[in-house]
Image 1 (tube, rainbow, N blue to C red):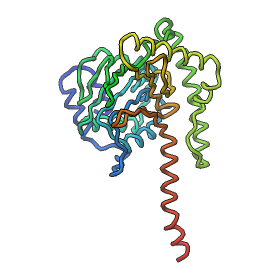
Image 2 (image 1 turned 45 degrees about the horizontal axis):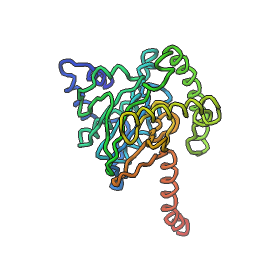
Image 3 (image 1 turned 180 degrees about the vertical axis):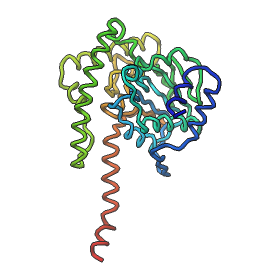
Length: 304
């Protein structure tokens, strides 16, 4: 039985499921875990819209992220696995296994991991209230920050009129989006060949298209108003693949982005300060620092 089958078994109650999950967590990933003493530490991390099971998923970049950060709590804010795409065509490379392995390892090492399923992994919503491999499944959550603010955490598709009222249109949009992501992969393959940093074609397109900008603005407004009506100080969500932090009529709106286009995470520092990390920028900065640190040694070798 391969690792993917074992993972799938754990999503359904059954004999030996949890044991299989533990076996997978103790296996060896295809991409070895990069251990380093200087990992960035945060009180809380939120990530969403990974879309494991699709070619658009930036699994390698997410693996790099997970190997360079730690937190007391990790929220998986929906669309971790793309069930829509997997139903049409099965796609699951080793790197996607490695992402799951790292999430399970994180839970095993003591991080509180909370999984809030989205619309693409909605099959998991039926298991809300249960826990698998140390990962708690919840429909939504209330997170209290270090500075005592209460944040509603949910995926956000509940406030997307297209997803709610016109599910068929959402699937049509999903096909168009997959086409755009295929172009995005071609563009970035070319950029990698010339040692250029990652750049999101789809993110750039959304920023330039008026209707997309209007949809995002309306979504942010509606979800912030709904959070305010529930008496919380703010809301953390995903769904629209657009990372953002802003105040909307006194409600703090946070979107952690995605790992398909922007490759972003929302983090809480130990004083309660919130920040969006753009991991492509973090990698570029790290590469520059390493090159700068290596420069004196290289000059010395050339001189010798």
